[in-house]
Length: 201
Ligand code: GAR
Image (cartoon, rainbow, N blue to C red; front, side, top):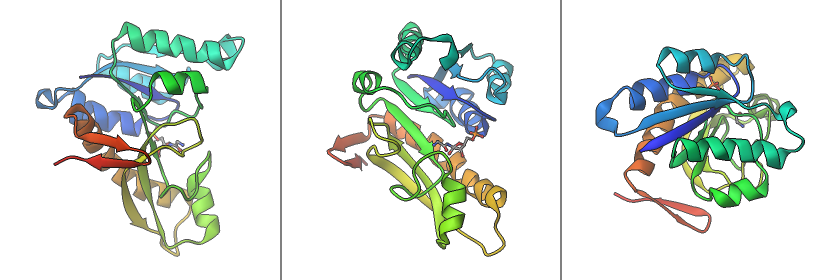
C-alpha cells in the first residue's frame, strides 16, 4: 500500500515510519511521497536520505486554502497514495478535501483526545495539571482533532516535567503506536462505525 506522509517539522514520526514500514519489505507499505508546508522542515532531509520523493507546498503560494488543498490532492493522486498520514503537519484542511478523503486521512496528536485539542496540547496538558497524558491516533474529520479515535496510549505526567520532557515521553509512545495503526489500516482491519473505530482481529 502506498502512503503519503505530510509534515511540518522535525519528522521523528516520519523517521519511525521510514524505518518500521518503508524499509521493512514485509510491511507491504511504501512511503510514496513526503509533503511539507515548510521549506525548512528537517523531515524533508530525513525523506531525501531515504530516497523518498519530497514536495514543498506552502499556503503563501496560493490565493486560498481550497487551492492549497487542491495542490496536495494533485500530489496524492499523482502518487496513487491510498492513505494520507499527518505526522506533525500543522495545517487544517478545508471540508472539501476532508470529504474527498473521508476515512483516508489519519493524524497523530500528543494528548488524550478529546482533552487538549489544538496547537499546544502538551503545554495545555501541563497547565491543566492532569496526571495522565498520552497520544491519540485518529481519523481526520472537518473539526480540529475531533475525528474517530483509532488508538491511544497513556503516559504519566511527572511533577518534574516541563513541556519538553513530557513531549519526549509522549513521542516514545507515538513512535510505537503510529506504525502499528498504519499496519492495521493496510491490513483492512479498521472499521469505522459512526464515532467508533473497530480494530478487527
Ligand atoms: C508530534 O508530537 C505530533 O504528535 C504533533 O507534532 C509532533 C511532530 O513531531 N502533532 C500535533 O501536534 C498535531 N496537532 P515530529 O515532527 O518529530 O514527528
